[in-house]
Image (cartoon, rainbow, N blue to C red; front, top):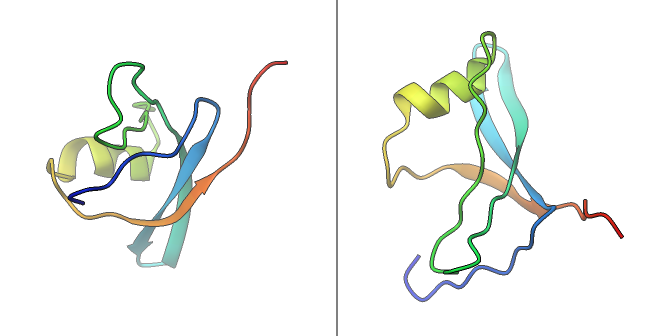
Length: 79
């Protein structure tokens, strides 16, 4: 994503698309922008005991992997 600049803010999330035996599955993850750089997109993945997609991201997805997304959504901030 050379030349890309992030345009997301705190309180937004990204929906990732996964495929398994049930077909297309979507899961949302909180974006976690850095106050120091906007050179990359980062999102938070919790490690639940029964989270199939979270475990897939943590244990089976390498750095630099290409992930399918529906885009950036949401506006969850306190007034």
